[in-house]
Length: 374
Image 1 (cartoon, rainbow, N blue to C red):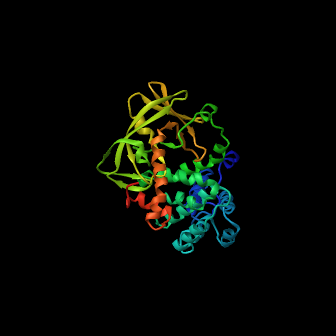
Image 2 (cartoon, rainbow, N blue to C red):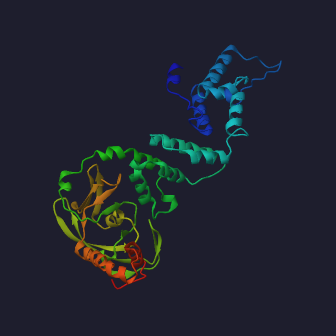
Image 3 (cartoon, rainbow, N blue to C red):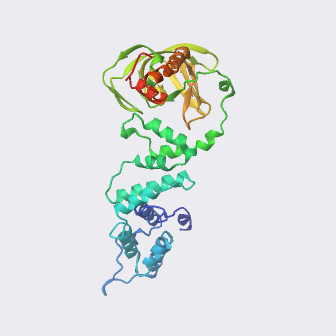
């Protein structure tokens, strides 16, 4: 018996929801052969019934004590008049799941008032408890509300977690959103990632100022600058992106160079979509690896993509975003730079023509294709 008592423990009611607490209580009582005292044990005896034995009284007392040890002092005070474990359970259920339980409105107020207290694990834990409490009341909330709430209350030092969630969930169906378990594991590694030094060989490589991020969950490539592409064509249908659903997006080929870890090699990446307001250039790793002979490996140093066992592209863990890999891809920036320079040089002329409108307004009009000729 002593060995059994050392391996069982009931969650603290209040730290856990009633459902979670009761589930562990059942496990503990079953492990100690005491579960009958909250189920079908007959406490009220008639004159013809055999009396409760001394051994049974000892086991009942142990059951009562296990329950008392797992609740707060306030709850304990409310159970002082309960005669047996079944009455104790009935009273706790009345408080936490019956008329005495918090209303949905009170739970919503609790959800609104949640703050970050220095521990991201505690933040996730508290939100999971609230989610379970809503579920106990028959209110089914979307599970990704946990990550959404975490994102809204995290301090600035966790901004890379927020960006990671945006990148992961953007363009995906709701059923494929990042789980809270996945998110808490990722976020707990942030501080560790800050102290990981990049590979010396990669830090010496001169790469393009335009960043390409590896997206292992995407099914298509996306760039946010049309001038990166050639052989551009209109497509039918739609794609889901961080900027929302895009109808009939343009698609083309991108001339670039890939760094193998030792040298740059020329490459043409096909079927690349153009999305103007996309905050990142994304390369779909799964799409690349769908070609024969190509696979990828990821470790603490970054990612390497192989073709027939020979490396053709490497990536390093980003210094700007947690758990995101930046691929070492270069594009010809001469054309892109010229486009920018022409626009900047021409803004002064347009500034005069438009009666000294702000350059920011003019730039917005150009992006929306309200003017052309620059």
